[in-house]
Image (cartoon, rainbow, N blue to C red; front, side, top):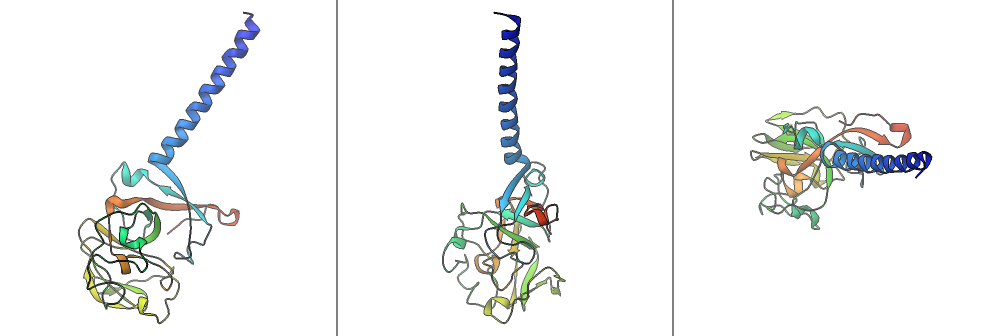
Length: 210
């Protein structure tokens, strides 16, 4: 075998190894570091629009074990009750047709993925008036939300306590979002990661999420 032919074969082998390594890095990055997510609905408008694409930080939550914070926009698995129409609350006397938001999810985790904003964590008392969060008895400033209107989904004046280890999630488009009001808080272990930056469309590349 000539030296030139051997050099060419070595180059091919090196290229293949590089491509395999690059693919492995991408797979590991998606599994443990960042993952892209496409916004499927208008429930997070005006913060996020249908078709927007965001990067989700999986590393801090899954590897470092950092707690989810109020104000984070997170991708997560909802309870199985969220898949039903209408959504199902784990507590029969709470949710869509009552004066209090749902305080208990159904026990099974859905395979679907949603994106919403964390508005309360374990131990917080939460109610809603006019679509605005009342946390621990205090109105929360929420300049990022879309006005809710006068629908029944906008007012849950009877507060519930978020169970320890769970988070309560709402869409920013309060008048058009299926969220924890109707199917309850979710365990932090069901949170996949925190959305932190937009990478599509080009006009919004680099915009932070939150």
